[in-house]
Length: 443
Ligand code: SF4
Ligand code: SF4
Image 1 (cartoon, rainbow, N blue to C red):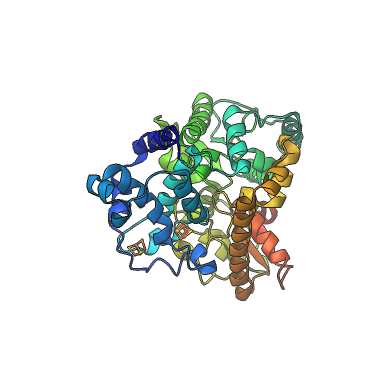
Image 2: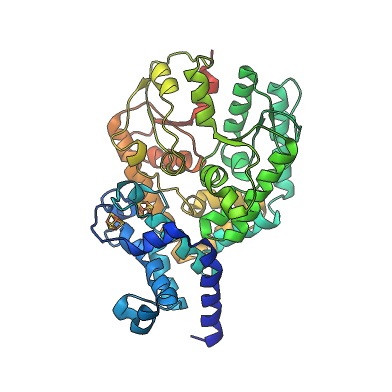
């Protein structure tokens, strides 16, 4: 390897060290390789090579080499690896199997978050230029706002027209002093338009004032979180916080899950070094609160329904399934693996964006050929298949529970589960967003 290249990779580590805090050091130092976390990991289920400890181990190897003087001298004898393209390519095989679902963190007695270590390794991989081109392109477009193509603007215009029809002719674009600000994204436009329409229908009915931005706030922000680009991650958090602050709203209402919820609610102020402008709520929290207070009434449907916990809402966000809504309005059945121990749908983190159908749909509106990028990228396609295999496992668990409808609150969960269920033996099981379910059954 060229000396200059090695220096650059070392510099990337020092830039990243800004985000190496006491928690990270604990994750690095205290894994005892007991294997307790293995069984719950969706990657381990598919291939025993990709368990949480070996996934997290790649960051430990680089960390030891950079920060432990004895390990630096002993090298591989002390499990310390230099930052080289070759080693980062090997690391990529592991950390890109991780959906950052957080399940290992829930069961580890020492509280080790291997998903977080995988994210830090992805950051080094990104600095080495080894991030799959599809993800790199989406991240760059989001940061530079080049996602605002004429097709995106056209779709947004159509959404605004639909919103006006259900909101007395008003779309309340960038209107100050409203209660709720909805940070609509390109993925909402392409994959979850009905979720936005349903959300607005519900807010109107509940008498909650709302506003929307004049353009989508990102592709599915923060894309930087997906690939470990902390500069881009911080910029997107700032963009959304500043919009909300200028509008003086009380709540940023997150209708999707992905990384947006934990990023805005928990990590945002630390990553973006900016004060949180207002309360951050998931649509699940807001609706459940109204149902618990007797302010949201739904008709009881005759169907058996279940809830799939999106990883970023439940495990990384602490948002439980909406008991008051689901137990009152459906014949509710809990999945065997649910709550903190729910299984990832396989669409977590980068997995969703690497699915061919997603790349195709985004290519059409973003006017960039993501499909061709995928075709050329054997690694990305292999990882996409791995994610889809996870989805099939989760779909099977759902099928065994026998619901007629699966309710959740995340665009990628809905996409992955719909696809896996539609190709299963029980293709008629519906997968719906909570907002769609509530809007349809609200009295
Ligand atoms: S991360 Fe925790 S549970 Fe998993 S092997 Fe290490 S110590 Fe054991
Ligand atoms: S975060 Fe999820 S996918 Fe990643 S290592 Fe832990 S359990 Fe496995």
